[in-house]
Length: 82
Image (cartoon, rainbow, N blue to C red; front, side, top):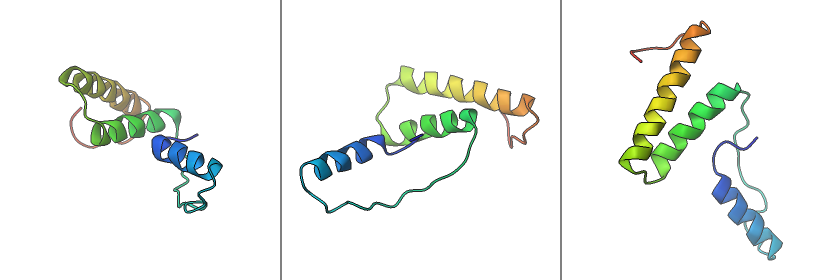
């Protein structure tokens, strides 16, 4: 499952389909994580890389808050305040 870099990956595939093999091999990081951690990573990536409206930022923060609460309820160590 691709968590981050989807647009870059799609652009590279399109270039390869058009015969540009410059980026035929690209580095990637493969990690094993739970669905909740994948969702957290996706939200944080989007907040960092995409210009969000204030409403979108608030929605992302609220979702992160729920994710951290769920992690804490599952017994995971969640540092700091939620």
